[in-house]
Image 1 (cartoon, rainbow, N blue to C red):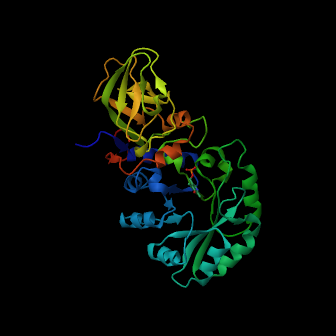
Image 2: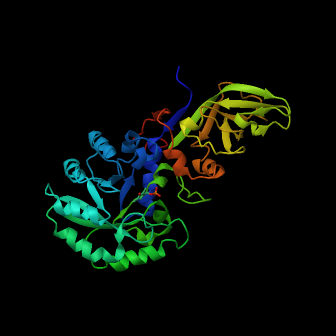
Image 3: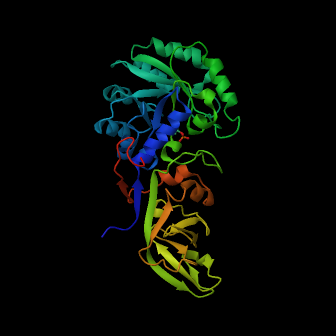
Amino acid sequence: MPRPLLARIDPGALRRNLLEVRRHAPRSRIWAVVKAQAYGHGLEAAMLGFAQADGLAVIEFEAAQRLRELGWSRPILMLEGPFETADCELAAHLDLTLVVHDRERLEWLRAYRGPALAVYLKLNTGLNRLGIPAQSARAVHGLLRSFEGVRSVSLMTHFANSDLPQGADEALAEFERCTQGLEGERSLSNSAAVWKVPTSHADWVRPGIVLYGASPFAGYRPEGLSAAMTLRSELIAVQTLEPGDAVGYGSTFVAPKAMRIGIVACGYADGYPRHAPTGTPVLVDGQRSRLVGRVSMDMLAVDLSGLEASGVGSPVELWGASLSVDEVAAAAGTIGYELLCALAPRVRREILPLAEPGQGAS
Ligand SMILES: *Cc1c(COP(=O)(O)O)cnc(C)c1O
């Protein structure tokens, strides 16, 4: 008997979100970012939903290999580059595009003698995480192009603040100043920049979160996005509390009046955030309810006040098509990204069938 907790993944939603990105950046090709198991949705669903993407971008070499095994034949971009010298050979074997973000990787490529690789030179424009200083772009670009093991050099950067008004202006200006006249394709825009910084779209955009139907912005959800993951479960028990009775570890929620409480098969071991407070929205039988008390490892409790018809077996949506993951994340003091990526391996995933383009709702 399977536990009723299920993550339903809708490849049609992935496809619609990809089309939304195309609509916003019509002149750019799209690296669909599928790192972290496609933000928790799984690579198989991503392959289906993003069949029309121009390339896929990941961090993990295991994921790149899996994508090739699944039949992805277009480019794959390795966003964190090689992690050891042998990754250059692996990249050639799997036909992967490598990001070069520091001097050490530059030396690996200088020494590399296999089939020539396509590389992206990553410039640091203020995020100060990965990337060579933008001012060194010209010198390093020239050097890379002289390497026997390199067949093409593209230029990229990653914004620290493209989700804020004018937040990417300075970084974009620096990128343009430092790369002026250099040959090669450009890629700058994450999801937020696809929506808010059209001047950064360039040759390739690199959206992640919007493709899954969640927002890159705090307190605001762009229109036109479809949630691709619906996390649903059921009530597996009902408790009737007297005034003063508590529910859950630490007894943090105390019933102010007699009330019914539903127990949901979903907890932090499934990826539901333990720090979600009382009041976090939950849908029970399609009606809005709220989390009460502490989230435990395998269960959480919801308020059934006003939901007289709900009982054991009633469907519960934790987030998804009818309750945005952004809203749940905001209530829990985090972002949709974290909730989607944290979905635990023990949660069953069901991939919905994909209708042919133009057919039905997909
Ligand atoms: C994750 C990532 C992206 C996608 O970011 P979103 O905010 O999810 O759109 C783009 N570029 C790089 C380098 C990344 O690491």
